[in-house]
Image 1 (cartoon, rainbow, N blue to C red):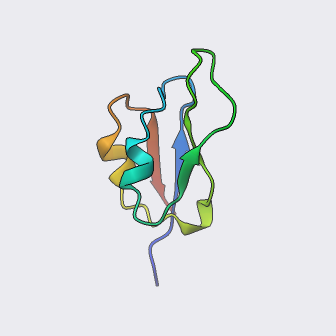
Image 2 (image 1 turned 135 degrees about the horizontal axis):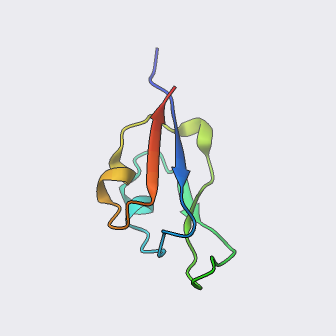
Image 3 (image 1 turned 90 degrees about the horizontal axis):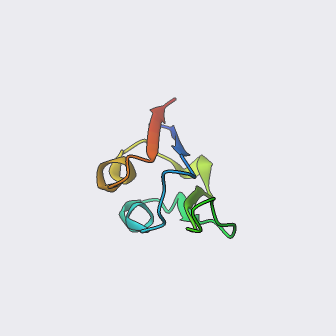
Amino acid sequence: MAIKGTVEVDRERCKGCQLCIRACPTKVLGVDTEANSWGYFPAKVIAADKCIACGACFTVCPDVAITVYKL
């Protein structure tokens, strides 16, 4: 059975650097179309069902804006 997970992005902490989007091997994350209160376009979950809880996004996030949970 494959490991499943879920990702949570803190919109207000994310500055939209997109490092997490590039690091995700299963393309779970994308860029939000709405800016946060700081004017940045944060990352958002676009394909939650594809998450394998690898933690690559969490590891590269310089703003500690991502939490990964194993299901």
